[in-house]
Length: 124
Image (cartoon, rainbow, N blue to C red; front, top):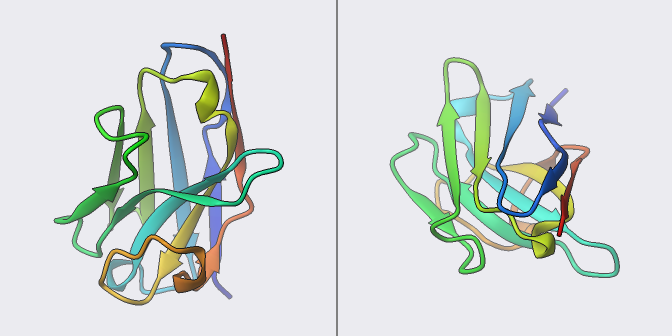
């Protein structure tokens, strides 16, 4: 049974930082690309960042480029999202997802497994 469990969300002031973690079980972790998505109230889930199996390739949404960094530790079966210079518009539930393909997909439908999400709230 595949499980992805996110942690690290919380309340932070604008300009602050948070680091999200997502630990996987039940899958051959290094063979999966991983992504972070987010969903704000009343909005569709959107791609934030992705990383391939080896960690050698990453991709970011324009809205977070230069502020967020995705990384992974295959030995710990964990993917991270370091979020700096947070803005109120970054407020959302953040989800990690795993994709069997080694391509960096940006659409929800391409990902096979999802975590339950962690809330990030940025106050102004």
